[in-house]
Length: 121
Image 1 (cartoon, helix red, strand yellow):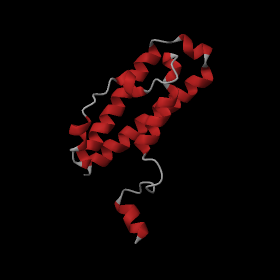
Image 2: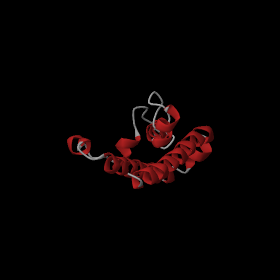
Image 3: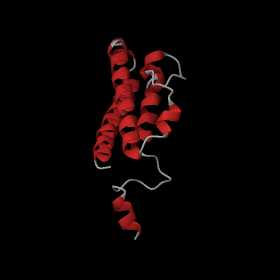
Image 4: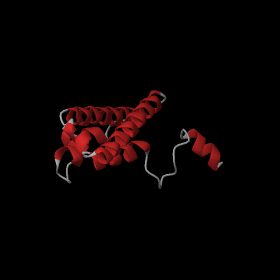
Protein backbone atom coordinates (compact mmCIF):
# COMPACT_ATOMS: atom_id res chain seq x y z
CA UNK A 1 0.00 0.00 0.00
CA UNK A 2 2.86 2.41 0.78
CA UNK A 3 4.44 1.77 -2.62
CA UNK A 4 1.08 2.31 -4.33
CA UNK A 5 0.63 5.63 -2.50
CA UNK A 6 4.18 6.67 -3.45
CA UNK A 7 3.54 5.71 -7.08
CA UNK A 8 0.25 7.65 -7.14
CA UNK A 9 2.20 10.74 -6.06
CA UNK A 10 4.47 10.42 -9.08
CA UNK A 11 7.30 8.76 -7.08
CA UNK A 12 7.92 12.05 -5.24
CA UNK A 13 10.17 11.95 -2.18
CA UNK A 14 8.71 11.37 1.26
CA UNK A 15 7.14 14.39 3.00
CA UNK A 16 10.19 14.91 5.23
CA UNK A 17 12.34 15.54 2.15
CA UNK A 18 12.31 18.73 0.14
CA UNK A 19 10.23 18.95 -3.01
CA UNK A 20 12.48 19.29 -6.06
CA UNK A 21 11.32 22.88 -6.57
CA UNK A 22 12.22 23.81 -3.00
CA UNK A 23 15.61 22.12 -3.28
CA UNK A 24 16.28 23.86 -6.59
CA UNK A 25 15.30 27.25 -5.20
CA UNK A 26 17.55 26.73 -2.16
CA UNK A 27 20.48 25.92 -4.43
CA UNK A 28 19.76 28.96 -6.56
CA UNK A 29 19.53 31.19 -3.50
CA UNK A 30 22.93 29.87 -2.39
CA UNK A 31 24.53 31.10 -5.61
CA UNK A 32 22.79 34.47 -6.04
CA UNK A 33 24.95 36.40 -3.52
CA UNK A 34 27.89 35.77 -5.83
CA UNK A 35 26.26 38.13 -8.33
CA UNK A 36 25.24 40.85 -5.90
CA UNK A 37 27.99 40.80 -3.26
CA UNK A 38 25.27 40.72 -0.58
CA UNK A 39 24.99 37.44 1.32
CA UNK A 40 21.32 38.12 2.08
CA UNK A 41 20.21 38.43 -1.56
CA UNK A 42 17.98 35.64 -2.86
CA UNK A 43 16.62 34.88 -6.33
CA UNK A 44 13.21 36.25 -5.39
CA UNK A 45 14.74 39.72 -5.02
CA UNK A 46 16.28 39.52 -8.49
CA UNK A 47 13.05 38.21 -9.98
CA UNK A 48 10.87 40.77 -8.18
CA UNK A 49 8.18 38.19 -7.40
CA UNK A 50 4.80 39.72 -6.60
CA UNK A 51 3.70 39.53 -2.94
CA UNK A 52 0.09 38.45 -3.72
CA UNK A 53 0.20 35.62 -1.16
CA UNK A 54 -3.53 35.54 -0.28
CA UNK A 55 -4.48 35.14 -3.95
CA UNK A 56 -1.80 32.49 -4.49
CA UNK A 57 -2.93 30.42 -1.51
CA UNK A 58 -6.44 30.11 -2.99
CA UNK A 59 -5.20 28.50 -6.22
CA UNK A 60 -5.87 24.81 -6.94
CA UNK A 61 -2.78 22.60 -6.75
CA UNK A 62 -2.25 22.36 -10.51
CA UNK A 63 -2.48 26.13 -10.94
CA UNK A 64 -0.24 26.73 -7.95
CA UNK A 65 2.35 24.28 -9.23
CA UNK A 66 2.31 25.98 -12.64
CA UNK A 67 2.62 29.39 -11.01
CA UNK A 68 5.52 28.32 -8.76
CA UNK A 69 7.25 26.73 -11.73
CA UNK A 70 6.74 29.91 -13.76
CA UNK A 71 8.07 32.06 -10.91
CA UNK A 72 11.14 29.86 -10.57
CA UNK A 73 11.64 29.95 -14.34
CA UNK A 74 11.45 33.76 -14.24
CA UNK A 75 13.98 33.83 -11.40
CA UNK A 76 16.31 31.58 -13.41
CA UNK A 77 16.09 34.04 -16.30
CA UNK A 78 16.77 36.99 -14.00
CA UNK A 79 19.77 35.26 -12.42
CA UNK A 80 21.04 34.25 -15.86
CA UNK A 81 20.77 37.85 -17.05
CA UNK A 82 22.65 39.07 -13.96
CA UNK A 83 25.29 36.41 -14.62
CA UNK A 84 25.73 37.64 -18.19
CA UNK A 85 26.26 41.20 -16.92
CA UNK A 86 29.18 39.98 -14.75
CA UNK A 87 31.43 38.08 -17.20
CA UNK A 88 34.63 38.78 -15.23
CA UNK A 89 33.22 36.75 -12.34
CA UNK A 90 33.85 33.57 -14.34
CA UNK A 91 37.57 34.33 -14.26
CA UNK A 92 37.73 35.59 -10.66
CA UNK A 93 35.50 32.95 -9.03
CA UNK A 94 35.27 29.80 -11.15
CA UNK A 95 34.39 27.47 -8.24
CA UNK A 96 31.56 29.72 -7.10
CA UNK A 97 30.29 30.05 -10.66
CA UNK A 98 30.22 26.25 -10.84
CA UNK A 99 27.87 26.26 -7.82
CA UNK A 100 25.65 28.80 -9.53
CA UNK A 101 25.59 26.90 -12.83
CA UNK A 102 24.70 23.65 -11.01
CA UNK A 103 21.91 25.51 -9.21
CA UNK A 104 20.58 26.95 -12.46
CA UNK A 105 20.66 23.49 -14.02
CA UNK A 106 18.76 22.00 -11.05
CA UNK A 107 16.18 24.78 -11.33
CA UNK A 108 15.61 24.19 -15.03
CA UNK A 109 15.20 20.45 -14.41
CA UNK A 110 12.78 21.10 -11.53
CA UNK A 111 10.75 23.59 -13.57
CA UNK A 112 10.48 21.10 -16.42
CA UNK A 113 9.34 18.34 -14.05
CA UNK A 114 6.86 20.67 -12.34
CA UNK A 115 5.27 21.70 -15.63
CA UNK A 116 4.94 18.03 -16.58
CA UNK A 117 3.37 17.25 -13.20
CA UNK A 118 1.00 20.23 -13.44
CA UNK A 119 -0.12 19.10 -16.89
CA UNK A 120 -1.30 15.83 -15.33
CA UNK A 121 -3.41 17.54 -12.61
